[in-house]
Image 1 (cartoon, rainbow, N blue to C red):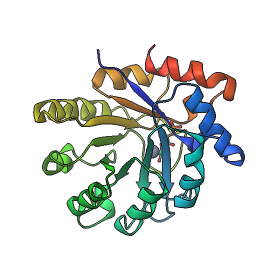
Image 2: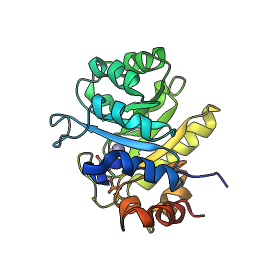
Image 3: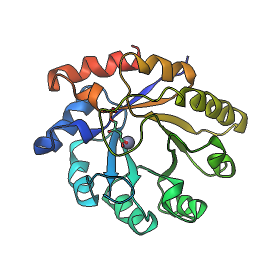
Image 4: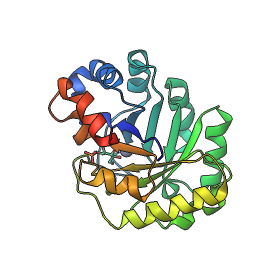
Length: 219
Ligand code: DX5
Ligand code: ZN
């Protein structure tokens, strides 16, 4: 079976000690650091900008998986690339030209991801499959941590798994929102490669992170 990666969402970390939290999940065996960037406009919450990403870069050698929930996207891509993002994902609804945004991310030497909201059909990725490195399926409506997993997204994950395998390309399939010990196995069975987990990673504080991550991965 496929090795599963865990990407803790630092949205659920202690923001007063964010550098230490990023170091702690790194030492606890996380695969990516998932950074949720919200603009109070595309989604109803405000979080992290490029200055914070840059400040956190020194605390981990893991890939920074930056999830942009901002509109417009293009004016901020370079700032996040320079701040130390490795994967930059965006929502196709957030700009008029998703293909152009993918090219912009790739031109900066970064991996490009497309994010599908719960109501966004799989067809949104069809003509980008040749260019993208990652597809992120939202299993909650973006904006907040701690929401419940929307089960209809399991079918979408399975359909995307088949589209990716048929494409023959190396595209990671990531799932974000409501991942816990009950839903992680469901997402993995449907074909996910990477699980984002905020609440479930950070529950119990730093001494629990290692066990939380291993349990979600199914180790
Ligand atoms: C929601 C974010 C998620 C969120 C996940 O907009 O994209 O990454 O933080 O949090 P949990 O794992 O608590 O659902
Ligand atoms: Zn996210």
